[in-house]
Length: 404
Image: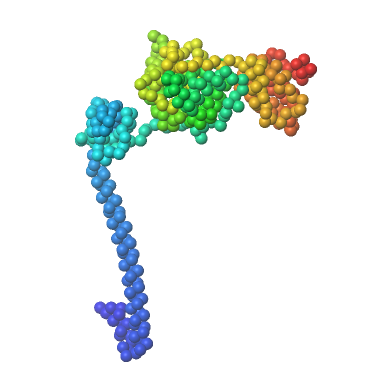
């Protein structure tokens, strides 16, 4: 069968000069076409070779025996050649470290992977934290609240500075004196008296991460879940150090233990025992400071209140007249007030109110002004807000004797 070139030769006279020129052009086009086909074939070959290489690597990985997870309990020598591990299969083993990890430091508590045959440590695994625990860390880590935003708590601020701020910012002072820094502090008092607010403020002043945990969140229905959460929360705090770990509503898991208890009560007690272990165990917490808060200090377990766990117990009472005035000044400094608004008179009308009540009164007074479509907040707005928030039998008016 004649080829394309032979057909071309038959159609033209070989002695024709134009024929030779056209024939050369035809050959050049043919060469370029073949070169393009060769490039496409080479690209396809490289792609198939890469795919083949990846498939062979995947087959090699599938042929490797699976690794066993374990936790390092202790390191037996300074060279870290031998360590004691607790395997996920149950028993404890004394194992060696693989040569591939000679530049990696092993420490107790690390998660590692073991060779299934030799039990040698092959790699260090990342710390596995429950998503529930990870979600407890505050966004942006450091709260934007300073001591200037806390009113009427001068004594409490001084206490927290000594127990929490100084150990984090000036640890050399404790080394110089020769004493160990305090471990934790307990806030107690009625709701709304500034316990959480002061905890956020000290985290801001020390530039520490702030982790807030609600006690009731640690009460779980499965055995051991609450204790595991406590352990992982402290691990998270160590990772984010320096850290302020704030456990609110502490009485939810730390009430006095009873002899007669249901299965649910026993699970809460296991969580409490894990918390006691973290507070008073052999594991040094480093730059982690623990703050507990409760409204019912009278029902807390005595084991939690002894020195060494909470080194300072700070009361947050209902604010007195001087404290209420300071709180009012903080919450009204950015408000558009009428010139004749007298903050001292408002203080006299709010006897028994907490800091949270005063903040709510200022907010509600602003809402009354917005309802009137006004540009400033008047005395009447504050009076209406006080009557609404405090809900007392006696209703104040702008003609009350305190305003005369």
